Image (cartoon, rainbow, N blue to C red; front, side, top):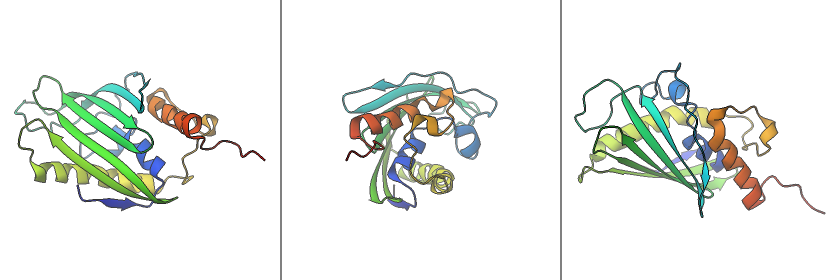
Length: 190
């Protein structure tokens, strides 16, 4: 994808990329499902380099070039976050040979400006570059204004600073890891 710069903290972008709760409301024109469907429970696992989880989801569109009929698709997303700012998303539509891979990594330019780098491919053997870029740009354009307008600008690292719902399991695990593994948000010692 063409690199982009977002007026947001790197951790805000990463949390958004790994967040599943916003799909039905933010991604209404790309893949978001029915807003009345609950995000199913999922477990976040720690790896040697980050966090991972799998989530089944009913997308509101049939966006994959695999000739499977239907207006919607059930998919399994596998998120593999490498600390602190990189994620690979693997998207597997049910009943299909097709798999899409999406790598997202960010580089802080400043505390509230972040350079975004993304690469996408699939299992076709000859990925449709124009399709993947167009789809990715549409999804990013749905996310970008939301992330850039979040307040506070810095990701709150105290778990009690905000109200969380079960669909926020990954966000909570990510925030805890930033504190526990990297000492972010820790009290300053004298």
